[in-house]
Length: 280
Image 1 (cartoon, helix red, strand yellow):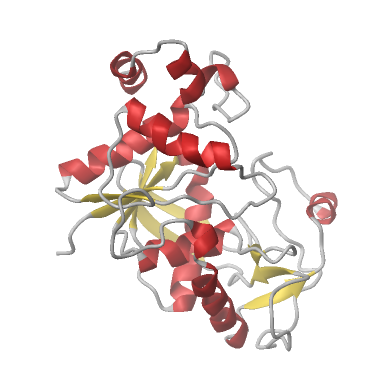
Image 2: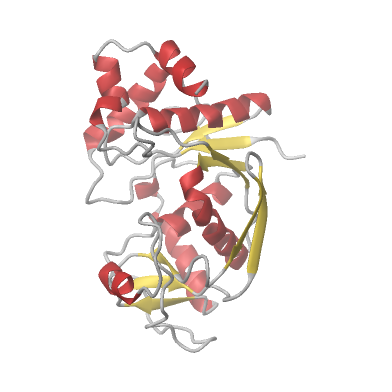
């Protein structure tokens, strides 16, 4: 059996809130229960929103909350670098492999274009199924030598049923092309998108289980396709419960009053916070 390796992967686009911390705490619990290793990875590819002060706060605030990791930017480890902005070469290699296999294609559609073409209602947090405006014939290999200047979409196998067993939610199933469509793996501003970077990094860092929020369930199906296309083994999954506000809306970084930084500066007690949110 593989030695358990879990990870926490915050983005420095704002101060982390207590919802992030509880999800990360679940990841820490899973690593401890399985006698494994916890990895901290900083996901800072969104250069327009990431800021140095938020990156510094991640380590300070998570350690204040009680989280500990064995590998990461501050701890080292043999699978580094543990900051995504320093891993561009591995993402580009993955892009080339997908391009050569005709599994991705350049797309000039904006998010607004896709939203306007949606033929059915959809979750506000999920992009509607891509209508295929820029999708070429199957087997068409792009002649572009580099990804910059276009969005690049992954060609999903329409109608294929995808399944996995989640360690909290049980059996999960989705239909490619119906529950989600062709998705972006590389952005027009020449930055690898979340779905590609996460899959590449989790494989390279030998993560055996990805603990993430339940709102990312559909993203897991997308990443399963990326793993398969790249010939990589996918980690197992645990989708943690979401922390919500008094109105039942999941927390976001704009909820400054529940940020770890604000709670910490206000004299909050990490043990009491953990007891409150982990028991609710």
